[in-house]
Image (cartoon, rainbow, N blue to C red):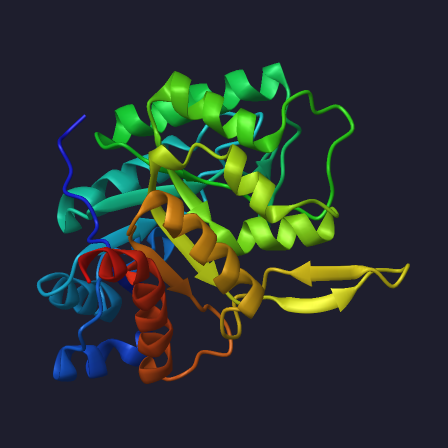
Length: 285
């Protein structure tokens, strides 16, 4: 695999089309931008031109949402080819994908669905991660999922499963703190114990986002991963717990619906930086 640069240990935001011009005009002091790879797979047009211009001034994280790493079927070779083209063109500091599946037979489901954590699934995911890294020529970071239920047939805890995938494939990890928080509430688990069991030394990037609180049919809390509002105070508390153990790590604010101003996104990224450097500043005093 080619040697990669690393994302700066700063707060970043997702790059959205309504903000292209403002970013280029004002050059805000944002640590990095992240894009969904599938939004830039066209042969040309304004999105690619704007991304190229912004890439000249900022570090870039490329985040895939369509590889279907956990699917029982083979990976889409044409999709890998297009990803390789993006990586060669934009030379991102980070490429990441989800521990999830979204394909079945010949169809594509517009969702990131969870997996049973079994030996068979583990072998399949490791094989797919190795194939992705070989095809793209870079190390990928695998993101922990949002879950709303658990599979009765699972024989691994999620943290053990992810650690084993990383050990066998050599991939890095992306820790989505919002996903950890949501999944713990939905499944009546403990988010802090999850973090304690997670292989934090392999984390190259962190995601933070907002969620929508709802209730299930029994009146219990049910949190939906909507990325359409500010980061919840509970997620900030969990993030503080994480970075106290990892030290500063590139941390992205994900906001994909009901998009706010770039100023509000920047403020969220600055809050992440204030938290991640809190202990560093204390040690220097």
